[in-house]
Image (cartoon, rainbow, N blue to C red; front, side, top):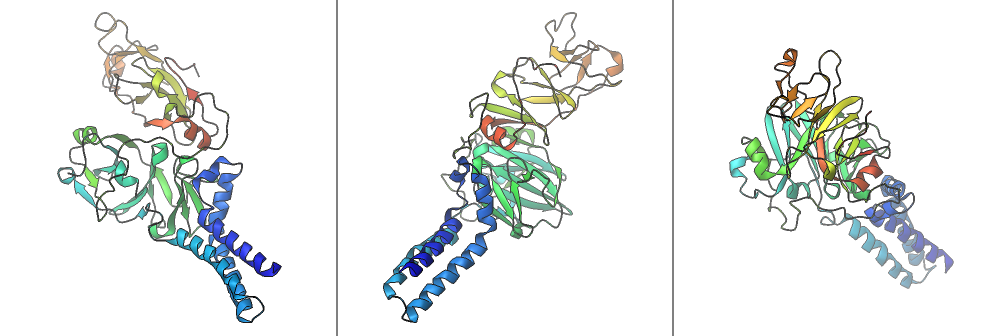
Length: 398
């Protein structure tokens, strides 16, 4: 009696870990994410163990050493495997041969639907949220260049990078969304890639990843006005699911316990990639914030209510690192620009261009710095443990 029960218990336990060991809700428990990673690494050994145990039980019954009714216990094992390996279980797929249509052909998009937009090669590309929800990993080629786009819908976070020829779509598998981040497994190398950071689970650059690609998140109407010649990710055969979110959505899964200075759903913007800084989005106004990100002095501001944040590198010639402020005397003796810098007294436009002031800076334009807005503080803080949060109207001097 004990032997067949032990066999069924171990076979069912192995099958249960295969079926549910990567469930994102496990991340809320201590070492939950580590368990998810281990469960995926051991998936096939566990499958083999379960099958061997089931065959052993069948052998005992055939040999007449145990009653046949013990075979009923194989039902849960079969059900767990069917649940995990069913073709329709996980609608999210890796797309390594995407097709695109022109902006005029994108009749399936409304102006208020959100897209991820980026430049690649000589073209602009738009990836609708609704389609990225089903295809959160996109690999595409442009002649000799290749890119990968990772989309974490429950974090409203997109990461893109150029990649080499060694990274292939058939090697990648979408594992789960622990702590609301996409988690991808490179089966060929045994490497996990975290969608929120674009790094491995060991916080290293993934194999095959090269340089990061700047991208933007905005409505289709805004992106089309900025890039009328854009190419748009075409729907999968059969169209787009009607219930796929086309706008930012809230985190869906419980987060691991951690101490935070602000509520987890506080909207933040992220500056930098390796050692980023978070900005409390709601505290940013026209009055620029002066911060330092990865040793680069940056000013951040919101041109007007409802517009996205902008960020510019504050460095000027002759090793000047001025702080910028709102030009309170604009139109009079303070110049025509909406900002002034404290070092040269020059005024600047919202596009980062010199307007008037120190003549040696005539024609100078500040370098735009990528900034991603509408992220969630709790998700970002978990995946970037050293992340600091800056708030307006003015960040502390650094």
